[in-house]
Length: 43
Image (tube, rainbow, N blue to C red; front, side, top):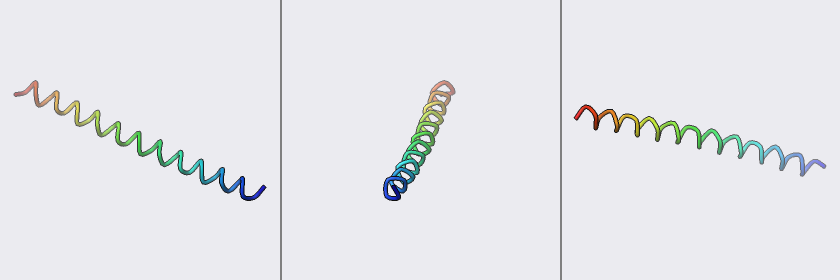
C-alpha cells in the first residue's frame, strides 16, 4: 500500500504543478494578447 500511496501523492503534485504552469502561461498569453490589441488600437 505504501508505494501506491506515494505514487498517488507524486501524481497529485505533478498535476498541481502542471495546472499552475498552464494557468500562468494562459494568463500571460491573454495579457500579451490584450496588450497587443491595445497597442494596435492606439497606433
